[in-house]
Amino acid sequence: MDTIEATVPLIDEPAGHSDVISEALAIIDKSLGELLRRELVSTSEMTDLLLDVRSLLAPPQSN
Image 1 (cartoon, rainbow, N blue to C red):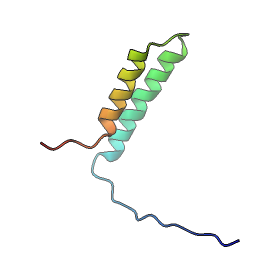
Image 2: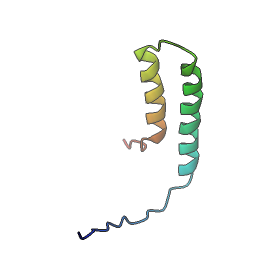
Image 3: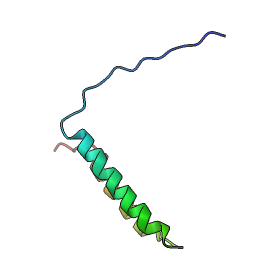
């Protein structure tokens, strides 16, 4: 059976890109630590967490 190898071009990371990812990971780690100690988590708390992470990772919107 033949295999197909796909290549993805490398894109230079914008300045501060790894800092943003590190900050998002820190928010996730902190929140997971807090959530693991609880039996019940509200949907609004999860929504807030996901929105925080999304706002860090989403590209800035131009007006």
